[in-house]
Length: 331
Figure 1 (tube, rainbow, N blue to C red):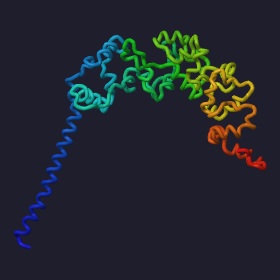
Figure 2: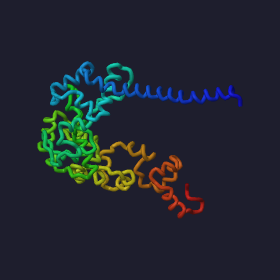
Figure 3: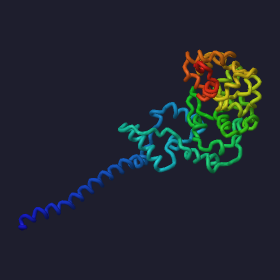
Figure 4: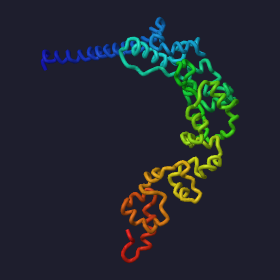
């Protein structure tokens, strides 16, 4: 190979390190720009404090008359970790101030922000003793485990006049007690005062609980969550009017047939409309006394698949296959 032919080959080889170096510089520059843009809000935060009241006027004014009047917005909403604070500043700067991009809201208050001041209420290290406040007794650590502070105390920061506060309520309590099989029949275990007095002190009343336990409870109590009734009431309290199956359990679909056919059935105390039964079964229910003799004609009308809503196919076969007379089974 001649010297003139080898020269271009050396030039190509020499260009490769230059290209790699150029690519490395470009990547480094891009990374540097990204880092600067990401860290910039934290740097600006040293000289710039967002004026939340410019947009959140009602919330800021409400906060000035509440228990957190001396607490800044950032103390609650910016969080305690570096990543959370950075995300908060990025949202304020790029999403709200400059309005360059749409970023996730940072309006939520992390539990760590609350624990900065309320250390004795920390979920993991707080006191295990029962706390009594505003007419209520609560094992705060046990009841708040896995919960957000704001799920019970959401209105404490800035409750705007006219809004229903996000706060703890009886419905949530009894739902948890029922799920964990806690006996709540003794009201005094949780209520230092009556429920009405407690609600008045707190300035709220659980709408559902008040409706089903109010003056019209006889007509309204069915509107509540029946799975929680036994947290406070004995089953015999319900059985006096409704019979043994109320409140309904998870197996009511498969067990209600025999109960509904019993002489002392009280289904119609709640289910007064025959349509309630018929819509599900696809035919008038319960079956009339002569249904065994007439069910062949009914089956032809509604179809066998309707029967299988309640009966297994083997229920039919066990009878029809064993009692086939000349001329067929009649179906």
